[in-house]
Image (cartoon, rainbow, N blue to C red; front, side, top):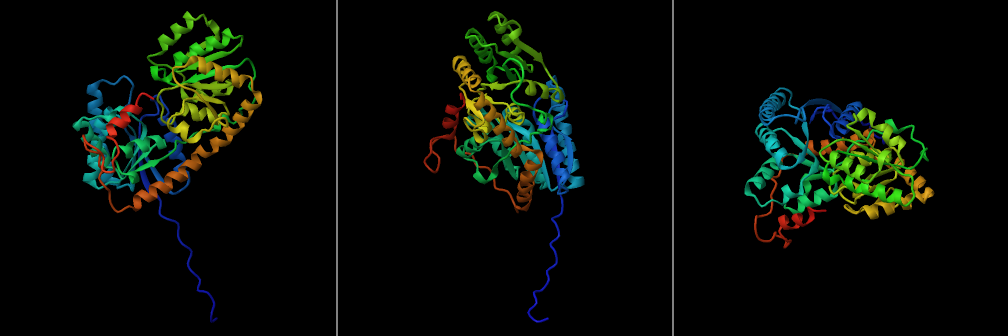
Length: 406
């Protein structure tokens, strides 16, 4: 019939992308295996991504230099062989930005350029000192590694700002999230039963602030508050923290659990009242965002991903590192405001929906398709070692070096 609209055939869905994921073994400690396995499963469940995982990075915490070097050579060979055999649309390496990682990743970047393979580097943390270096060698290593990548993912806007300020192209960096599995916290209730229990859960290294948390616990108990502190994790600072707790006479008010497998960590979030993490350096802290999923009020420092997603007083109270008196005062204020704690708990459980694996997977799929649609790569361009930047900014090395102690 004249004038009838012409029926258009339904558009077929885009072909699935074949993505290879390189991540450390699930047996290794830390949050990378947890978040990346959840992301891979969610991507595969959409039907839009064909997932393949391959070994990458360290296999054991106690590897010798020789073992690590031989494994790296074998990994480069396997990566090249898999790429030539299967020709994935994209390879994602879950890595970090520091000198040790650069030594490894520059080989993957070289092979990606040689084999014309699209490579996405997801940086689970970045070292400001490595970015601020004036060493020509390390600046060349950074440039060579980034030049082999179609895109670079960072876990906070602060990190992207630092790389761009150092002279690397803005469009190469993408702020991405980690996936947080809220399933283990589905039975969380508020208020929590029992006496107030503070939770510190992280690798026990000096920069995480556990000594300050122990001192704050002593201050709180001296003020007449029957608070308990649970310290979950292990690391080189544990012995000093245990010694301080003993010296301060905290006795059974402080409990050190030692290393706890990820599958058994949920109960500590469910038993606690407040997460306390006055860290000097964080990326996308899985401790913080798992606490959010568990509906815990959070006390932490305003840096990196926490600063991007948490708001005071809705989700968090900000604290400064190396200030146990202020930390104790913030805890005391929360304990005296049960309505504020309850609201924070509700808000955090609602916020956790933004980090659900299904939601985050959709964001990554959009990013992957955009990277695969790009015809070529631009070469990363760091600022010169001396003089001013073309736009008149101060030298990037100097600016970032000033931020490093934060």
